[in-house]
Amino acid sequence: MKKVFMNICSFLVTIAIISTAAVTALNFREIYYIDVYRLDIPEMSGYTEQEIIENYNYLIDYNTSFDDKEFKLPSMKFSREGKIHFEEVRNIFHLLYYIMGIGLLAFIAIIYEAFKGRTKPLKNVLKMLIILPVIVAIPMMVAFDKVFVLFHKIMFRNDYWIFDPVLDPVINILPEEFFYHEALLIVSLTVIMWIALLIAYRIFSDRVEKQS
Image (cartoon, rainbow, N blue to C red; front, side):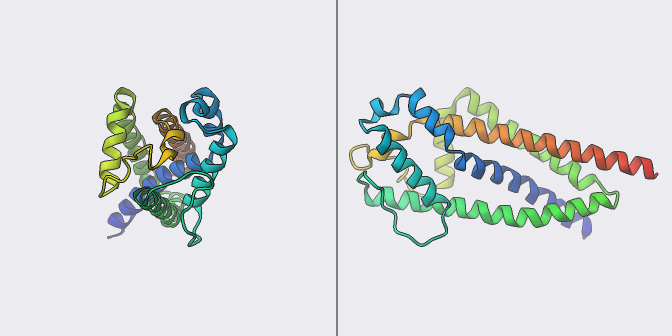
């Protein structure tokens, strides 16, 4: 029974780490600010830099907030379907925060086991954490547009994510290239956390060998 529990903990920690990478990437607004210039979003969208940053910041604040505030972009019109979509995106990020909380408890259990000399649960996290990003990263590098569409079809039960630029001009300030950069950041952060866990695993493993 304990083995099953620790396997569940390893899986939860893996998902929590990926969730942490996703939430961190979302909150790292500088990558978008750079893309505003790199992708020439003002020229692409027809909005001023100030309007673009203002509306983008609102989206981030809305998605990361737990306040029950009504969705309303500062200076862009939006459709009913667009509003529903961003509400669904917000719910997904709320779910990621809950996963992170549960994963933290699972991580504490795994570290406790490591201190006791049982490092296998931590090793299992390392295995899963390197496999999952690779599975995602390879198709993403080959055909990001197809992965992007597949992701939305899996995550959403409607087609409200297919924006009409006339009804929801916010899509004009969110080019696909930006989401590609976000995806790269998520994978990079996941790899960094994997390296940190690998170092921790080796420290605990060395400690076990010295005690034996």
